[in-house]
Length: 628
Image 1 (cartoon, one colour):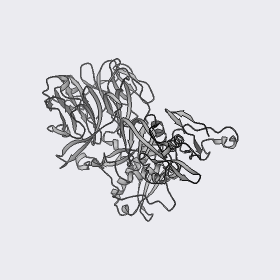
Image 2: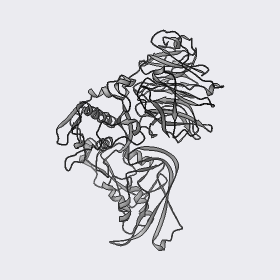
Image 3: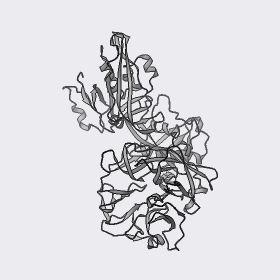
């Protein structure tokens, strides 16, 4: 184990991987394990294998400062309980003060650089840690993308040990510092679920309030700090409440202070052979009613479904004395499904060469030109209103269309013929590019659009798609940029914005806050945060599920690409998106079984079924959309 290898731009100290158990991994090969041969350093553990544990190497006697630094950086990527090996590289005081809960993610890992100006004879040594910081994960497990340089230091001093003076680290940055590849190997993104504020049945017509996804990161294997497995980490994260960014617009049905009450000596929850999970809770939850308990169980069920690769049969919540509080089965949980606001749409929509709104059946696999394409009923499909962009309500009964000159916004039925209506909104901007953006519907039935008039730029909301437009205040993050395009989530509490400033268009996510009476709330968009800071230019965006976006853009000096991103800005675990030629618009459904739609300047309206390649639907057309 004395060799060192170079990976990710710096020297890598050896580390050991331990394989726990043979069942299902090596099969019959367990009986013929080799008992001789060289031992080699492990460069990386297999992704997603819960049976693999990676352990760093403790510092050897008389280790030099560079070995101490490299060994510590390597040990931070290991699975030792309480990071025991990593702490052996620290002084007792530094170990006590070091909190490895938060994580800094660098693109290629930290690169240590010897600071030659230090006085080695005086018993001190300093190394600079440098790199490009791409993300931070805080103590709430929330991921936040960053695009900045990283520069911190490790300070070493000579300490008295059992074998004499030894170099140890006595000054270091807080938390773990990991390269992106190590972070993706160790951590996994999972959605926690909370209920959207202001989604009562009286307001929305829904039987239950809507669940909103709140993405966080948990360790794929046992957490070194708590010794909890991935399932228990996730349940604990859910009980701790929503992340700070989402907290103002969601709530949890779990009473404040609710926590797991594991049996003495138990550190993890476990599914039984029916894929059912019993979750023992402390006394804070012991007296909740059945309606609230079912909501709590729904939060758990959808959270666990996102985490696990198999269907969760049921969740049983237990009181502090071990008695059953309530039980919720997988089928019963469908009443709470986050996507029920939009469901699986019947049609896909786009504008044809006559600038009419047309549709095609969402589940068809046709590839021939114009096959299965028909105009929608009503004035938006008749050609009486030539359109430049559209949005279809999530119930697929109404649609909003922006006129071909982007000056006027119309709302009309798409299920029956009706008389043409006067525009519900007009822009007075002089140039077409400064007028109305493409509109978007949320699951509450409200219609959103931006007026890009440089003299009076506004974000507007039409309650029910027909009330007088209300201006929505945008605070905390717009900083003088102009909204070019928008897409509102089905739950109505998040909005994706393309904003332009200084000749660059970027993607930001805002939180939609409502205050006051439900029938006439004061609405604002707050706390805008960048979602794709590494992208130089973003040209199109669409919601692609509960906490996922599909984005069209390019990085600095790069070519156009289509990419899935989580709403926290992290790269989704979803499959990569094949490139299409010169894409100007993209559309995705909340139901991931339905194909992506896009408009290509070279190929027209194209469709990407799951597991297939792009196929041309019609050679000419524009503005493809799903309801929303």
